[in-house]
Image (cartoon, rainbow, N blue to C red; front, side, top):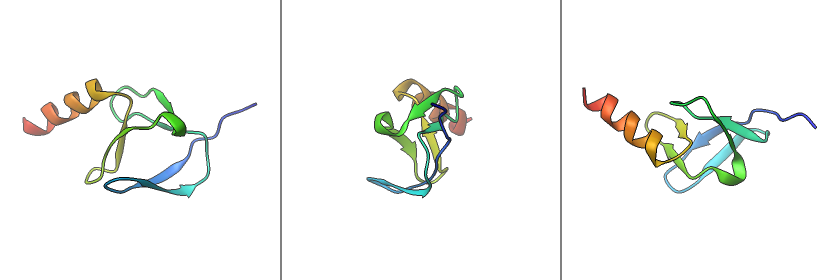
Length: 64
């Protein structure tokens, strides 16, 4: 079974599925994140993150 990348619109406490799929890609690590496991994203940047580690990396890069 092949996986399809989803397209989402990230909101403050949820996300809207713009194009159906199974996963999104982490903006920092490039890892695939299954939608059922997606917990971290940035509404302003419209980016998904694999874990708090990637969130921290993004925040540090924005402060530079």
